[in-house]
Length: 278
Image (cartoon, one colour):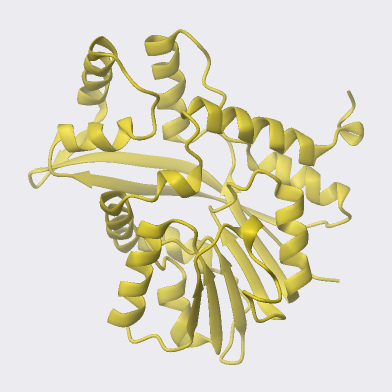
């Protein structure tokens, strides 16, 4: 089928469903609803200033700006942006992530942030939000099953810009998972739908975004290899003792060590797609 004939929203649905099924039914919100994982992620954010700076670069913000942050996590963008703008509404569905977000709001004394603890697809635009927003951003939080509906909702509540960030090409996690799924389960790992689908969908919707591509790296720090494996196995289907042993042998070869910590690097290519609402 020619690219112009494909329904890219349906392509996203199919690939996202396959990815979630491969992970034992655990989608992004469920995967991050774990206190240890949420706190570890915030530590990674603090160490990854270059990545955060690349995300923030070019955002059209000023002291009067009102922002909607879809999938805010522990405050990755909320913490650096809130002191510079008038208001932020942070939408975060994972309870553990939301807990860390609230702690950071208190710690940094942020008084202009409202939090909505729902999945984006469950958010009521009139009851849960306070539109219109000058900037709507979803940074590596596009795990929605229906990406077309998700973008349409962002469009409705924006009076200015929309910024989307997602993965361009396989991440290190994808490469690891492809090897492990073949080795452990003798089947292919489907992976998450990529940013090319979003670009094609936007084009079908009559939106022609600016595109920036840049590399990213975050380091997962663990006290031990066993702690790292416990985190990884939460995102894997149930493993037998033999499979768990093979998993441990694989990661023992690729982890790094520094200052008594075990480090699992996470690398990827980022695609930033952004446009001004017509």
